[in-house]
Image (cartoon, rainbow, N blue to C red; front, top):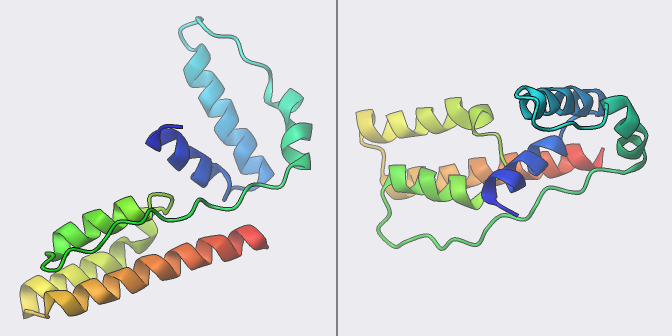
Length: 132
């Protein structure tokens, strides 16, 4: 499975059945807009989706933290590690930490430690939402 497929699947698993149907309708529209592909109607697939419980989010990738990592590189590493997360949900927090580092000279190691906690907390919340 490609990285894009993994990300789509991770996002799909966080959606309600109604939201999954909407996403499927849009995907069908994109696939059929040139008339090259004909897919089944979402209502034909809905019972199958309703019967299956979405799979839990994938585990984070194990990417080692370099000894002398820069804050921007850490954000990139954490984005790859936690590929299944919606980064826009964390944008305010991550940009705030980056600003503290650049504008006030907050220590990079300390900022990176906090960034790791932000990403981990967001991942834990994603897993909790899935379990509900």
